[in-house]
Image (cartoon, rainbow, N blue to C red; front, side, top):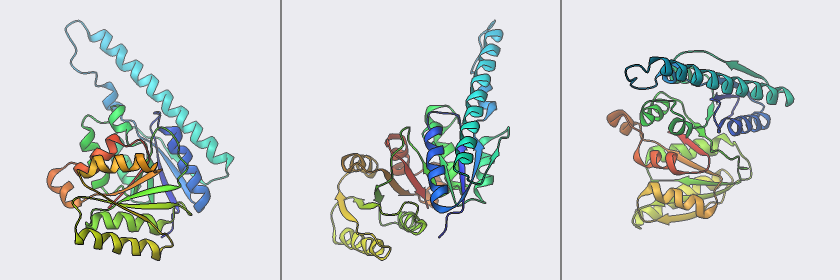
Length: 276
């Protein structure tokens, strides 16, 4: 699997400089082109909530201030992205459109190999009225694999593979290994739940798959709820990235991201590789 087109979300948040850095690094390594897309929905910024009687003028001033600040941050992000790409002589383009941000991203994602985005900005910056639904829409609409970055850049050397034994988590791990995004990395294969012969077998089988791709993973089994255990394991091992899969059946039936993935998205302080 070759990575030749990268989609980059330019939201103008604290996550954006880190997302740009990852995109540029991967584009250089894989000789890929990068499409930067602005991801702020101005309709949401104009929504300041209920306005009390006589408060119309102040509400309008707040709307104008929010729009002005956000537009400037996004413009700064576009300029920083363009400067980085030109300095590295990378092929790039920018989509800067108004309208529903997630519709734009999901449309462009059809023609890219992976997307890089400050996913926690969905929770921290009000880019969606319903954060859970926003994340669901990204994954459910086909935006995958998706690399969700944290506020601080980390050199990707240690990657935690969260494996539940499900087809979805297996596909995420396989896609990550096949992409070869970061060569020479260390892997730890983690499963959560009560120890059993079945657990040992599935860990052994997935470890064999990793070896076939040139990796010798460490194996770890933890008891307890998967979401908190994945976050704890990543912190204790000092992982630089977590690989997660999602069940499309869960998304289709419940219309929310699977509880394990959602917990990790909200609480992990390191990049995530989300696939299916």
